[in-house]
Length: 177
Image 1 (cartoon, one colour):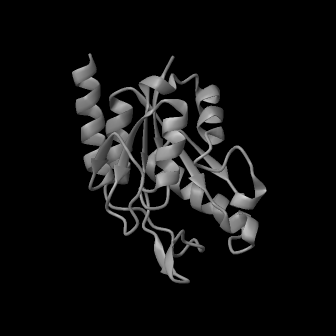
Image 2: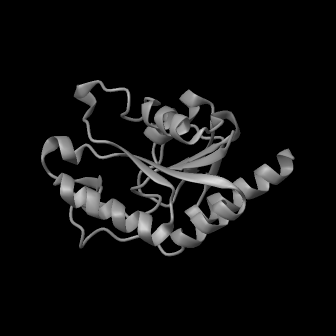
Image 3: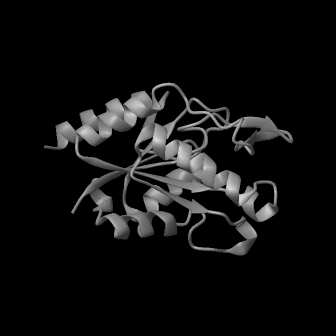
């Protein structure tokens, strides 16, 4: 079985936008940009043998704020510019009660099945309690990126940036060998 790093999107790979009194996902292709160093971080993970899988809640699709074709264009750019292996999206809101909306583990389970991933030997990197909860639910080692304004969760590790999270993941994996 393969080992993976599950990556949240907003706040980990790309900046959030302050809108409507809180930090939110970008809604236009023009406002969607990656943090510097994301492609290098993914490359380092690939070089270490990890599959890189994005798992993201996008409730703005269900609320009508985000056009699904714009989301597809964002993800095509994300995949092209970073080399992530796949992107899994939950387009629902909490009220839908779906299994794929983090903190529920549906996205991670589907990605793990598609890529034959051993989740207990894998990592999840996120910036919110929902991400950490999803990782915990499947048995991943969890890393909270604290570079965003909203911090929560009870992760096993904390990192200031994705680059720091990758260094921590690689060091942890080496120590486990």
